[in-house]
Amino acid sequence: MTGFHYGGDVTASYNEARMLPVSADGQLVLYSNLEILPISSQHSYVDYWGSRVSSFEMLTPHRELALTATSLVEVRPRQHDAGTVGWDELAAAVELSTATVEQLGQTRRTDPPVEVVEIARAIARDSSDACAAALAICIAIGDAVEYMQGVTGVHSTAREAWKERKGVCQDITHLALGALRAVGIPARYVSGYLHPIPDAAIGATIAGESHAWLEWFCGDEWRGFDPTNLIDIGDRHVLVGRGRDYNDVPPLRGVYAGPFGSTLFVTVEITREA
Image 1 (tube, rainbow, N blue to C red):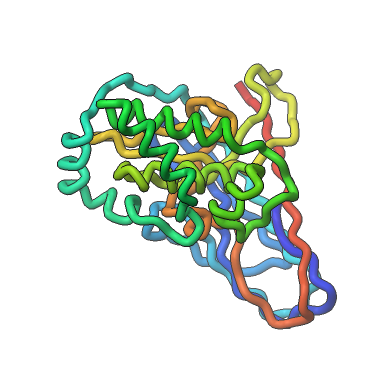
Image 2 (cartoon, one colour; image 1 turned 120 degrees about the vertical axis):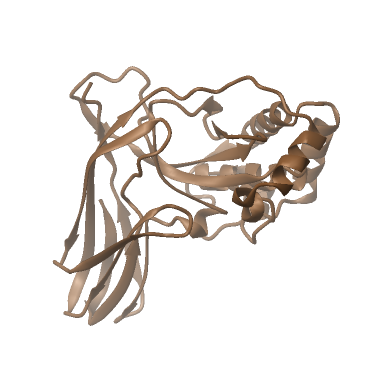
């Protein structure tokens, strides 16, 4: 569940939600539904990046906007092949792939500081395998930044997070994206949900997490990794959307007419069914 509390009556709001998972490699959506309060009609479509989007408007006065996304997803263990690809081979594959065009350039959020670029280049120089270097770069960035809430905000950049050496999954993912792109490895931002308990009891509902991780291009496929937790993407990760950075996949975005100021609320509950 996510939404906004407003400081008074909002007369109109226009919004987009990206909260429903997609069927993709490693996961199959069996059921999904988005409930919006106050009740509103919605238009659903798949955006340029392949994310499911619900677009809706509120034209009656309201002081709270609440969205509840309910999904049942079958998630399977992902395969992470230990294949190798040389730097020249990767560069040639990138030139032939349209899927990597927008995933190689930096954005305002991912533009890395000089120290991060130096770390990435040092690792790249010592490895003839571009995909092995990518994994090492992500681990190095994850090791260097402490996970801590409240230090950064939703609009923070990779440079700001690196200055503090603290941040959340969004910041660590932006830093890793910037580092990979700096050495010529296309990489994309992934948003979704994470079950925080590896061996959770079946039927137990617990507080889950909205989460972010990344995927990089390995010449003929994309390889996922969670730099915040330093783990491979597995059956605890549920993918919602992909993009160049967080700005392409925000769970909720919109504009409204009404009193200045709003408070965001987010709650994630996850139940392992089998």
